[in-house]
Length: 330
Image (cartoon, rainbow, N blue to C red; front, side):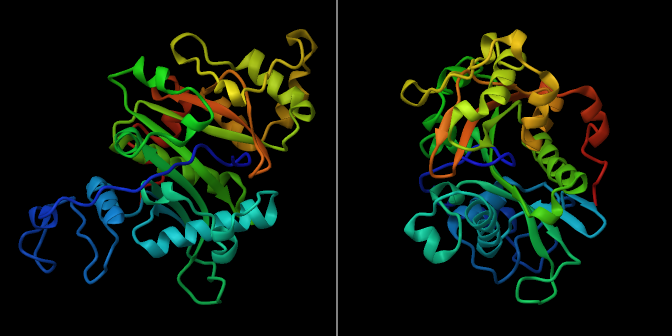
């Protein structure tokens, strides 16, 4: 799947926006005043039905989810925004790393799949950085893809279900709302605390707005030879495995054992050093990991499933971002 910057992916086509819904939002037209807190859709901008649907579902979220200096985090608003995220993903996954593009991705120079039409796309934009063409307006330097359970269930389920048997997990928690995170990447020059913190501030704002109870998705270690990843895989298996009601197992046909070194033989310091930064970040937040890894040959990675109930997030991180996500609010 992805290298250490990401979680989850997706598929299938979205449903169209219900007829008349925009009139219900603002029956008096673009020029009229909306109730406080409601952000109107941009005038004269033709959006695809899926993007219109996403924007309707996110009414009430601020346009800017957070800001640190010249960096802003927000959701993609247009098809052009989504294309910028896809181009960034292509640059990181295919040009920098070892992913193998299909014909469509190779021609378009974008990492794309059907799930892009269903998901919300979180963007970090550096407003002080020119675009590739040297024009002002800022550049997308980081992205995350977000897929809520209610959307996934209308269109065939979560991407992670192709690698992990997550349906029993979801069925065991009928009153909880799940969110799949994926396709995460950041440009090399921005792989620092400030950018990652802003991404997570955006996710936290989104989680609070949509009343998400559980986050999950596939995080990745670089390489497709599990024997070379024995130390970090064994560490996650012995020290951070999801248990009881949160345990999830890789699908049988793709299951790769993570129990590759006995617990007493693990050098914890070396194991932590071998983990990608994102997986270490999930550990600090309080995440646990599924049973079994999955090799993703297209992306040149070995995936592990991250399970993070919101109630398990370390209190110090909740305090850091603020119970209402006010720390980096614009």
